[in-house]
Length: 121
Image (cartoon, rainbow, N blue to C red):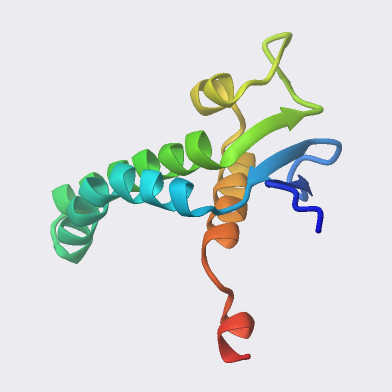
C-alpha cells in the first residue's frame, strides 16, 4: 500500500494556485486538539452572545482558528507569489487573499471531518 500524507488541491478561487493539505494522523489529531481546545471554548462562548462586542470577538476568534488550521494543515502553496516572493504559509496568513484563505481553511477542515454525505453512508 502506498499512502500519501498530503493531498493536492487546485484552487477554485484563484486559478493556477495549488496547495498541499496534510491528511489526518493520530499524532497530528492530538496536536490540533491541543492547539484548538482553548480557542474553541472561547468561540462557543462569544458566538452565543447577542451583543456586538461578543460577535466581534467571535469573528476574531474564528480568524485565529482559521490561522491555526492553515498552519497545521497546509504543507505548501504553489503558483502564488505575495509581493514578488513565493508564498509560504506564514506570508499567506499575513498578506494572502482572503477568499483563498477561506477556501484553504475549508479544505483542511474537509480532511478532518466527514461530509454530510460521508456520514450518511
